[in-house]
Image (tube, one colour):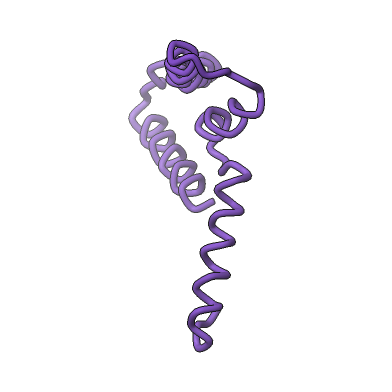
Length: 99
């Protein structure tokens, strides 16, 4: 969550600077956001192509696991389970570990 807040704060700061010096943003906001989304999706097109060329299936589950988190910025379900397992393992090994 912290990177989103920092990103928003940086954007607001740049917007204030643009307003003070009477400069318009280089691209209309909607077009800029669609372009950024296109970049994120475009980056993920390579992984399924490489997987198909290797002879592996490209399933919806695989796409949700590998590509969707990179597009949305949200962690995948398996990485959450892995993180939880690592935390539990560390606590189990060290009884003095704190939350």
